[in-house]
Image (cartoon, rainbow, N blue to C red; front, side):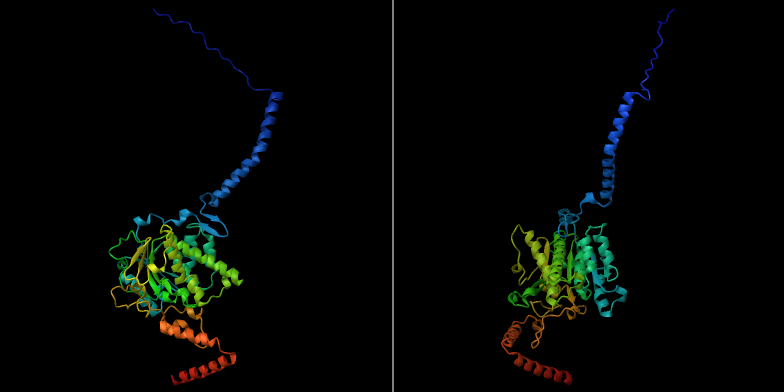
Length: 414
């Protein structure tokens, strides 16, 4: 028979760790703890406040950095994806005062050709009523977080400047094909890229508009004698060249406002200021700057595109010859719209802005632009103006009076 070994019951020890309420040791620890809390509590509260504040203002995302104005970080200058793995979005953009349902017949006829020739493309028209909403969405906190661009767009009151800027903002944000409302599509957009190139390697498609470098030193024509067309072009989204152009326009407007001593909302511009500030000259400058920046430090100038017979791809930008988007101009060897290479036709019936921003108009000999880049005509205009400057005021007034009589007789005979 087994017997169990005796095991004594476990000892139950109770240690009373409580100190008397009035113990000197307890009072010491309580006093020390209270002092520490008092010291760190303000810092802790401040930390929580700052964290919540900056988190809600997107501080930690650092979307922009402030200098004399907002500038984009390098990461935002890059395309949304590798441009060599993407293609130009299949979307056609136009901008106008009203939507398509309220177009004049001539605008409607031209606009309809774009979706008709490109049925697989999306089509959208931004208007005076909804363009600000578009800019606020894409360049606000939900998009690129560029309040400086939104503020500039709101402040602008010059219609043509706002229209130019809007097309650049749209093409940077979403890309696609842009065409002025009075431009007719002659060939499908698929024809814009020659077969020797792939869609992936073409980031942007532009065409020559004016190719008259012989007038480079002319005081009036010189600034616009070499330019790419911006009434029709195509691009992938978020190209650095488009942001370069947008920020060039920002700088120009702020400098002009400073020089003229008026706010941007009160600026008044002449024809050449529009062309050089936001129009073809500004567009061309930004393109050449970007080409040079991506050309391993070697400058790219107009010589590369003078008398361009076939398209040329430079730093991802496909340059088409003048016949593609600007045929039938009567200068720059632009050919005509019946040729196989003509892709679009500009009708100019929505180009009334020069009446608000007049060209240089000599009191006796009028506008040199009426020569339409004809060398003989321009030379004669220059000669007449030079001779005019040698005349005394009395003789000038006499000739102006005779001219007024001749013009009145002409109008009467009509």
